[in-house]
Length: 154
Image (tube, rainbow, N blue to C red):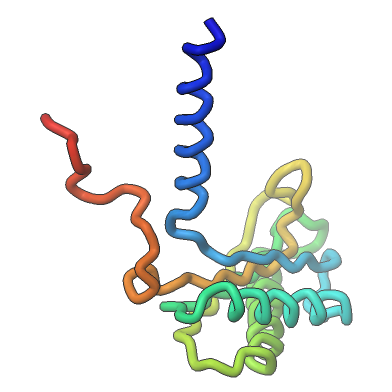
């Protein structure tokens, strides 16, 4: 019986490790105190370390996206105020990012408001997410879902 499961285990390990290598995106999340758009020294250090790590992980990126968020469901906060707060957060992180990123990479900055105070039990909606999107073709990274799928017959 154990000889039947060994090939299945090997296949599962190989499949999971190859799936993790496909189309990676470098991501970090900076959290903010409720109502604040100020970057704390720890956030600045985290962003600087993240930019360094991203630049040492891949040599080419298509784009960097920075997305600020703020919650609407805070007593006394209107949707317009939440939108301005999300924009301020995204703008301040973008300014800090530009100080650390020496290479020219297309940059997209967005902001969003959220109806709920929390995205999940672990994460609130007062944040900025920074994502580096590698240039998969130039880096010749594997494709997780090639089209057509080799060996697949309809």
